Image (tube, rainbow, N blue to C red; front, side, top):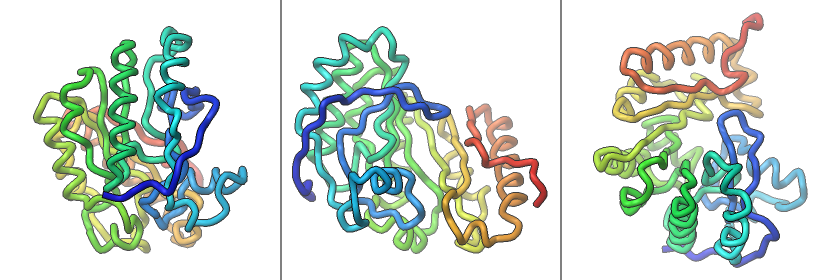
Length: 260
């Protein structure tokens, strides 16, 4: 197991996301060791506001040491306003091979559930099987943009393998948990030539699928048919989900009516 680079403290933990499918969130780690090489919104945001200067700094995560104390203070004040809490929007709650981060996440989820607050989880690490013992309202998700391990090693070099992510989520699904998959940022064919239907078949057991394009990427913009491509892929996801009674959400700006 890997160790965090250090510890920081924060003044608050729970806040409203302002994101299209989010309510409240918590980000109890600064940075992300997964080292994704496509444009990462979280990294760009932290760099813009001066929290992080370099990629090398970003992939050395710092754990917020007073996470649980903040939750103890904030949950009683906010629980009547919160519909759900997502872990996380600017980091990963189950960062691959970082056990201390995972344990903090598990305790945080338990505290929120004890206050009857639903949690939604998204990771590129391994979802712990212990989550099967938590609230049945919780939703456990993984990011999955390909099945090609060479592409993962290139774009998400320090994450769990695609199959390991899938297997952990499937175990929770088989235990009766609600599961979901984020297919975002989905790459254009000039980045990797792959079949979306193969990926969808692998996750056809899940309860919900979110699909979104790759943003902030010159390579995608250089692909002349990228708008048409994302329109077609989004429609395919919608039809796939409708046929299998899977909930779905297409991210904003993925489908466009602009000229292609």
